[in-house]
Image 1 (cartoon, rainbow, N blue to C red):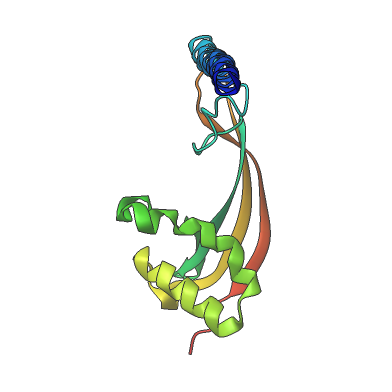
Image 2 (cartoon, helix red, strand yellow):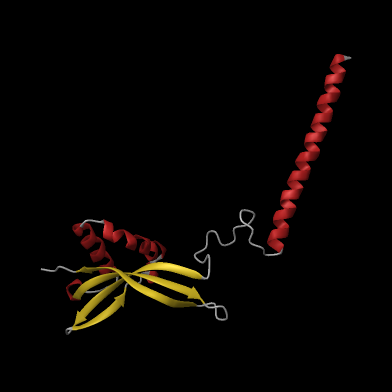
Amino acid sequence: MLLQKKFVTLTSVNKTTSVVGRTVTYGVVGLIVTVCLTIVELWPLTSLHLFSAVRTSQTLSTELIAIVAVDEDPTRVRLDFSDHGEVIAHTSHLFHKIPARTAPEQAEMIDAWLELANLDKDQVVSVQLERVRREMSEPTASWREVDRVITREMEMERP
């Protein structure tokens, strides 16, 4: 009798646990499907923009600008590596680390980027690190530059 009572109790607990488990599972799956179908961004249920480059209508980036003097006329050249493959194209995340490096390390990093950009190092007078703020315009969904600030300028010391 005692064994039978324990068995009945365990069976009723298993049924209750099973019903609760199914209810929670179906509820969570139903909630996630509903949120996805209605295209509502309710973090942490969905994170459609979590891993994309565009998270909001504003972006802040750092750009490296070379001031090239050809025939004594300075020209600004933005260093862009997008045509060098994905690995090199994403080295721009290192730009903000330049000021924290020692002078020889800065020169080495900048020289490597200038070489990649096919710029003659002897014609580069200085390199500017600029912070650029952009906003996305609603009708065209294209980026519009709002602000550009020179955060650091490094003179190129050439022999």
